[in-house]
Length: 220
Image 1 (tube, one colour):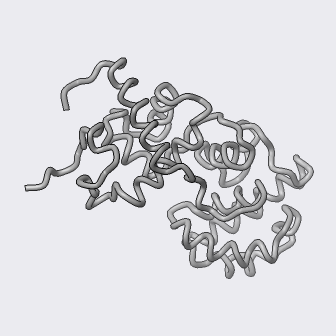
Image 2 (cartoon, rainbow, N blue to C red; image 1 turned 90 degrees about the horizontal axis):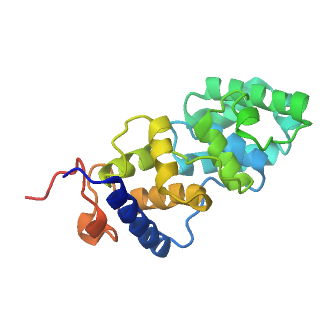
């Protein structure tokens, strides 16, 4: 791909946003939750696990635990058994219990609404905090960069960066702040429904005309 000016990239990015907004008007977080606490726990469990699997697990987990104090009181062995199929279940169980203990001790059992407070909780990095702030509270502090967002921003030529932190900074410059949360959902939905990692459906892609297909092998 020929080097693109910053102005041209910004203009193309805006057109991509417009098409994705029309294509996925109902895009949303696909982790089932009814409260910020449920979203926080589900996001911790989603590390290296599919949303579909997490939703199966949390259906039982959220029936057992309603509050942060409930998670603290739940025996470690029982928590591990419930979340076993999400992978890395021992570490995740430890983080969930430590996270909820901190919520009880420092926040009265409530999920805090700032990046600084959230990232001080066990098992919570910037990505998880962005998920909770953007989807649990409607607060746009940053852009969630998961594997789909990382792959698609590269394919679309919107960034040349390789780390989630630097990709996020690039996207925060290109995308209007009020769209930071939904932008991630648009890309995630597009990644799951059209732009597959191995076999992207370029022929049917709604944004094909705006995509340089960086790293995608052209059909012979």
